Length: 359
Image (cartoon, rainbow, N blue to C red; front, side):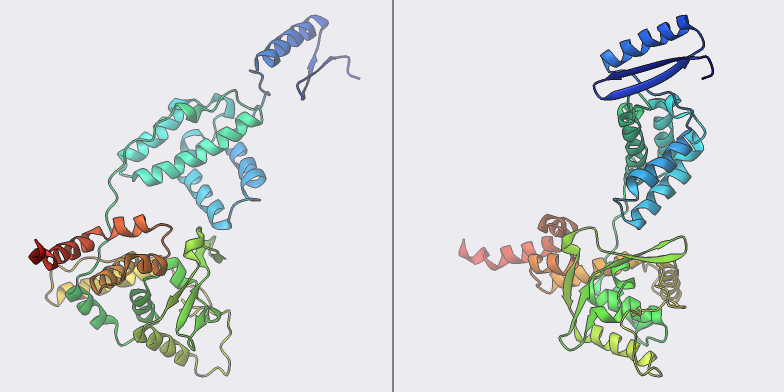
């Protein structure tokens, strides 16, 4: 023994051990800890910084229960937005004002409310766990308000004329990106779902594609994960144009006797999936070419615009909303109706005109 006094207390399952140099100091510590335990305000002494606690929180509490892609998102949000403000601060010193400043700064820099909410989820989660571990008395995020962000831009759905111009530029299929864009436009798949497609997901005999995965890039590696909702796991029928695209991609590998079933349908190179950055950059170039050829008001499109254009064409041509919901993989019919109410508005007017003679 080193001659110090040892104080051990057990109360309601909580065990506390402290040391003191003198008996008087030991008695003082005993009274203080007993008082805090009785009132439920005891907290462990820790010298951990927020950086250290975040690493522990991720490794111990999140990695066993979250997808790798979700972990990567949490780490990105922390590194970019949270770490610069409180990373080096002692965990027990963090106040609501620190967290509020993080979110207010994001608002000033034009971030959407959705992104700010994601950042809040990360900092709130790590602080909630710190309370459970008795590292802090209360969660400083409880006193924080997520500020209003800039309104999210609605995704553009091409008109019939714009779609014709766009498809004229990608119809030859000379690049695998052309095939990717055509297939997404013909099926309404999300980017990650389309990029994750492998030949084992394709059933040309029955003319369907099985949507089983989405793909994320984590530290330069493709990570296939199941979609977040059960409704996203679905089978999508293929129209002739989509089948034509798939057969063309099969022909690219004509030199191979057998196409590996786990190979990406749209290979981005070196057996990697196509990346969203690459695809959007290519689309930006196509849109620029169209404007240079005389259609000066042609919009700048993104991958998600193709999904919206598919859905808009589907409703314009009479596809029932419930069927469209199933094809798009929406979790509820209200989501489908809310997104495409602008198209249904035209159909409602036409429908009312059909019954006008009855009154």
